[in-house]
Image (cartoon, rainbow, N blue to C red; front, top):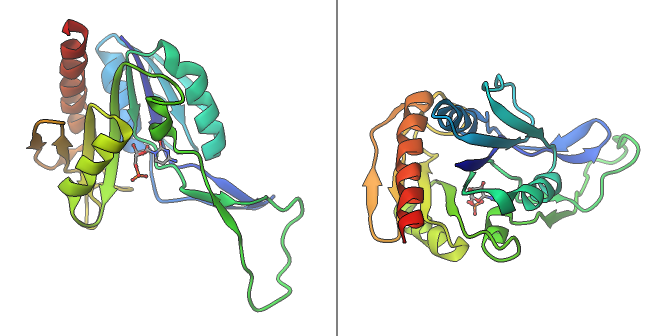
Length: 215
Ligand code: C5P
């Protein structure tokens, strides 16, 4: 199977030396890319800046901003059987990046931000993707309800939801505890390290993709 994985944070430039970003380590996405490649699938990893080592036998397309990730996904998703959106894409980006370093002249500084493109939300519509679509939902409340809303509104086959308010799991950590939200059911997986979890997730996603191919 051809598998696309987005991973890591994006960086949105403010000026030549500053950016807006988030604490995503890229671990979950890289572990998923590794799990699929290890099973002999062809993986394209589209990733924002991380310090993760690149898994073997994975095609790698580095990007920096949400707009670049959107463009890279739009170019490649057409030939994919499975697309997994594990990236923590910035929701807002500065309206424009200052060409020169911003000087500290006043006591206050206002940055004007604009929404970034919704990459996962473009998959079914703008990109016309018909393969197996998997999104992530990092929530601090109403985990299942919010994940189920995301599943429906983005046309996903599966949303992998995790409660980022729990200490020691999820964002920027080695372990994760997720709820698999499908259109017809939800399955809670026990907390485990991201490498083992990625193997279980890859299995579940391959089962979904096989089910889709049978239909
Ligand atoms: O709506 P929310 O940002 O919580 O959705 C998270 C999911 O959407 C993740 O799978 C993430 O990779 C994806 N996403 C995206 N493009 C954005 C924002 C989120 O692909 N601009």
